[in-house]
Image 1 (cartoon, one colour):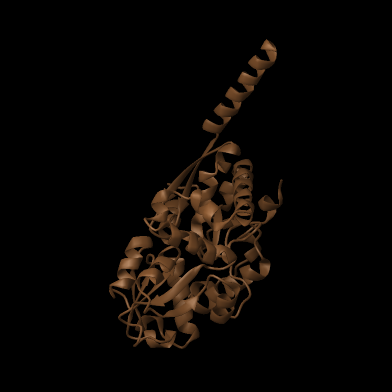
Image 2 (cartoon, helix red, strand yellow):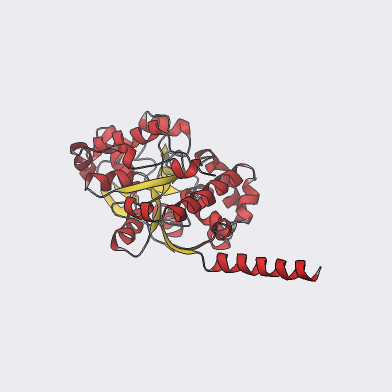
Length: 331
């Protein structure tokens, strides 16, 4: 019995050392308090990264473009951001590869301010008005640009400004500092609780909303991506990251919005936990159950980008190099 106990202690200590001394990964998030990146935070909160022997340092940025800048600048290894950035960077000759797909839909909502709700009744009415996005060059700006172009509105006829996410986005829209804003939950649901006289121009949280806005069945959004050469030289760490994220996505599918909220940092929930639970409930359709990238969805993202960005339209891009399902299929 004494020998067994000693061996058990040694094993436990070895596991603890492995968890604390595991591969250190700097993971940049394009706005951790946004629901679109919730799986990344949950993987940390649930201990799944640690259980995979990883020491993951989460870095929070104001938007996806800022997280991408950190990666390009060398201060981050992996990004929790939107898939479209891998295609945009491919057009610039840089290879980034998405290896876990967290969202089947973008999860953003284009909503008017209360003050502009009467004047801005459709996306076409945004001409000559001010619209807010999370940050300059972010996926929210790219999506807004496409929504405008698809309805015959020249993007330069709308003044675009950065409003961040969460509290800053709510304040900008609620107080009329912008006439409309691209918002993610829980900010959008909280805004609806506080300002009932706003108007939703596009809801990209569900299949129906994406179909109406983009005429496509899916539009992969939040992913984990990294430089292709980093993945090649860190295949084991990449596989561990993927397993942790797939476990998180599966966990979300088997737990209630209230249980998911319980595992979310209190700073994300704010003072109104019921509203946050409602936001999680409204957002559940957008989360991937398995982390797999749909090739048709990847094609849809490329098609949209090619219509709104000259550099993507003029580049020869092999989409199969911008994502892989190899790691999510590993067990």
